[in-house]
Every structure is written in structure tokens, then in C-alpha cells.
Amino acid sequence: MPKLRLAPSILTADFGRLEEEISSVAPFVDWFHLDVMDGHYVPNLTFGPTVVEAVRRACATPLHVHLMIENPLEFAATFVKAGVQRISFHPEVVRDVAAAVAEVKAAGAEVGLAVHPDVPLSAVEPYLASLDVLLMMTVRPGFGGQKFLHEVVPKITAARSALEEKGANADIEVDGGVNLETVDIAVQAGGEILVAGSAIFDGVDAPAAARRLRERLDAMS
Ligand code: DX5
Ligand code: ZN
Image 1: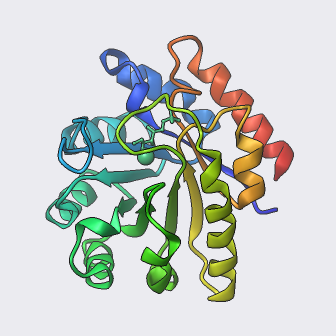
Image 2 (image 1 turned 45 degrees about the vertical axis):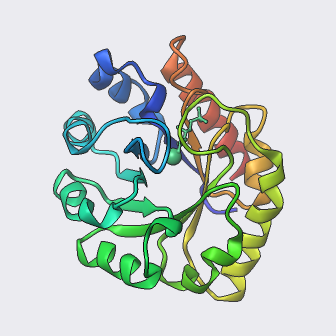
Image 3 (image 1 turned 45 degrees about the horizontal axis):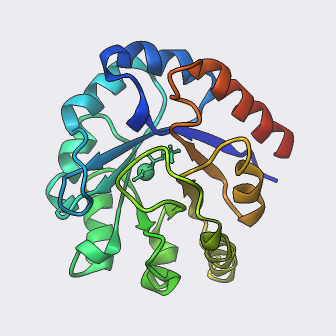
């Protein structure tokens, strides 16, 4: 099993101590997963490039922006300038998915498509070979701290097979409700990069929580 990677979502981090929160878990993680929401695609509003720049200043860890917004292409270059390595967006918000994928790459970022729990894998299958990451959501987008949706597991397994069939090498990232109880299920289904928000930034002991998840992933790698 290739190295399993851990990507904390900062959505439930303490934004009053963001630099401290980021640097406290950075030693245990491979990516930071930054959930950008516009209040239109999802009923929540989070942060933009300014916060991403602050995260960039706080660590050298690669940054993956998960755009839950209606006009992702308008902001791709801005997020690249803010220091982001990867940008994922939801295919249902763009007219031409292939063109949008190419446009994000042209802006200078690796690219991913994010699959809402209610969106079928067929919505992204035609584009798998051109992706760097396939973001499989196991919660309904909009909020951290939700329960892992087990009904999405077969879709993750199907995504794993579809990538193999196409000889595509996109990472499968599992996003939502991942914690010590659900991480094994997410990995067995095919998850390679595991997003954990409230399981890490729970206000109790973020570095300890990150270390426990890191140890669990290393034991499965
Ligand atoms: C939800 C976001 C997820 C979420 C993960 O819309 O895309 O990244 O913040 O947080 P937890 O791990 O708490 O579900
Ligand atoms: Zn996310």
C-alpha cells in the first residue's frame, strides 16, 4: 500500500490562533485541505485567498483548496498566487468540465474534481485521466463535524476501479467525517489522502489527534 497521506481541513480550527493551530499539526501531515465556501454553492461562507496566504506563511506543507463555490475559474489564478499547489472544484458548477480542468492547470495548479455525495461517479468518469486528485466527499458539503456517509463507500471503490481501468494516477482523497472510527473504512475503499477536520481541530489537542491519525495511517501503509 503506497504511503497514506493525511490532510487536515482547517474549517473547524481556531481562527483566532490559526498560525499556532497550523504549526502544531504540520509535523504529522502531508497536505492542508482548505475549504473555500461562497454561501451559494453551499449554505456557508468561509474564507478566501487572504487566509490561504496566512496558512502559506505558517507552514511549508502543500495546500489543497477545495472550492465549494459557483465560479471556481474566476479564482484559480488568485489561489495559485496565494501559494496553493492543488485546486479542486465541483463539476456541476461549470459548463465545460474538460475546459475548466485545463484552465486550472494552465493557471499553474494541480487539479481535482470534487464529487458531492449525491453526484454519481459518471459525472467525473470522462475526466479521470486528466486529474491529479479525485475528491470523494463523504459528507454533504458546507460544514465540518458531520457523520461519515457510509453509503458513499461503494462509490469510492468504484472510483478506485475506474482509475485503474483508465491507467489514471489521480490520488483518491476522502473528505468528510473521517476519524479513528471511520479511517480504516475510507482506506479499504481506496482512499489515499484522508481529510480530517473536526477529528483533528476539535479544540482539545490537535497535535495529539493528528499524531494518532498519522500512526493509524502509517500502520496501514
Ligand atoms: C465539508 C468540507 C470538508 C469538512 C471536513 O464541506 O469539504 O473538508 O470540512 O471536516 P470533518 O472532517 O469535520 O468532516
Ligand atoms: Zn473539503
